[in-house]
Image (tube, rainbow, N blue to C red; front, side, top):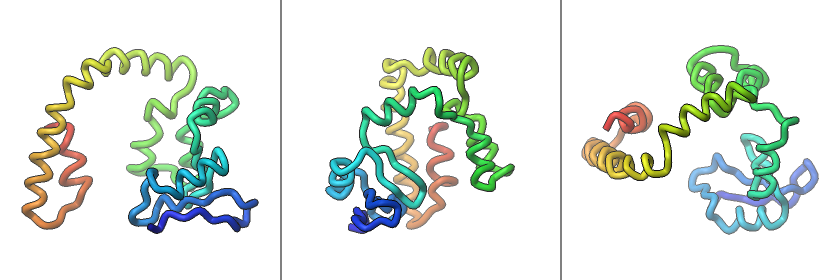
Length: 151
């Protein structure tokens, strides 16, 4: 499997997980080994937090900022479809604005509501997959992911 733990990483020997490699899976033994060695690993897309306790602490740390626009700008993206999709996400909001949005959304997506949507979503996914399987190839986002919420 192409998932690797690099013991000789130039940044100090921290685990390296190639999450972009074909066949990568978070259930791989290499990921468990990396998690046992350290609470985070390096990857081609940045640092990965590997343990729940540390992830929980980081998410609650007020010193960390969820500014999606600044993140995009730091990566050279100042406009376009990815920017327009990423920046307004609820996860990129902080403080009162985030709490207000989360309060609205949480009322609509209770565990009971989500459980009731599962059969509808599974049926839609199965129908789309069957249609696409007969074609032999597809553009996944356009042909499957975008139409899925509409069933």
